[in-house]
Image (tube, rainbow, N blue to C red; front, side):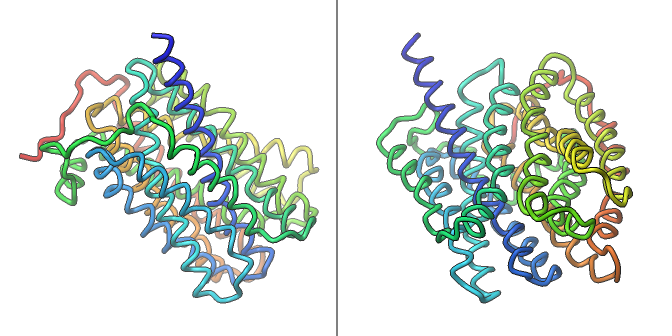
Amino acid sequence: MKKGMASAGLTLAMMWIAHFLVDVMIGFWSVYKTISGVDLAIAGLIAGICPFIGEGMQLLFGSIGDRGYRKQLFLFGVAATGVSSLLPLYESYFYFFLIFLLTCIGSGAFHPTAVAITSGLTQKRKGLLITIFASGGALGLALSHMIFSLWYLHFQFSTAWLILPALVLVLYTATKTMPGASDRPAQAGRRYGFEALRKLFGYRDLRVLYFSQVCIQSIYWGMMFLLPDVLTSKGYPAWMCFGVGHFVYIIGGAFMMIPGGYLSDRFSARSVLLVSSTMGCALFYLFLLTPYLPIPAALILLALTGASLGMANPVAVALGNKIMPSRPGLVSAFLMGMVWCVAEWLGPGGGGLLTKLFSENAPTFALSTLGLLFCVGTALTALLPSTVDQEFELDLA
């Protein structure tokens, strides 16, 4: 028993560290595009197309992982996202696109695999463990701008060195056995594809949960993408625009993920999602529509906004795994990758294009327009059940 608990604890720790490193790399593009002066519309297209392809592959990777290849996908995902550290070595939009595309494909391989492994460590506390896992990614994403700008602008080191921690973790993990990640023969009913996706949409609760998350995550990712530009246009100092502002926005969500998971297990995921969406909307517009706040007040407001928006997806993923517990990889891919591939197209991609409609304070007005999705997302969340009374099984016969 103690040996099994120790093994599960080590696996959870490795999942947390890996998630931290993966999401550090994911955040590099959104700050580098501002530092290097990339056109926001083009940067938005790159930030929309690459996740649409890469994160959209989570469905494929999730099904492959459920057939017994989780460890291989885990190793590939951690290594592939590391190429984001090579962005400053090139000046071509074509290479920016290729590097960020591989980063997103790596993310698509990593996330459903790691969530499935984490979910498999417990039967009763899935919400808590998944939010612990998610907090590692949130912390990594929070520090990504700060790590990049300090390394690249302040210390003036080559960012290529930043891939080393990921490679060390890959080499270490390759020698270890992880519960829930061992190879198994392919099983009947585990070969998912577009038919499986169509049937997932056939379950009313999963369908409503999916579209509500698309709305909320579009705003979350759109704000993350344009935040350096919004802060710059409001006249805040560079240290806040290229690191600290992003940090407090993401870390707010990280701090609320574990309490959010606990509350969703203790009470109702629907209630947690409704409260987070309503509060997030109010805080989001308060920040955007206030021309200038004192720096401490602005940072607190960003942290509260991030806390409200950032906790939503892990709570939704945990709810999805309760609705259909027999397919954790597929359900996680559906509610993360299939949500993110659309949300990052609508959020960063749409937000970047919307800046072309405004001549002054374009990033702020673009985000304000994008925020109309709060209305749709909150209305859909209200349609979710308060409790999961019946578990569903995916029938591919």
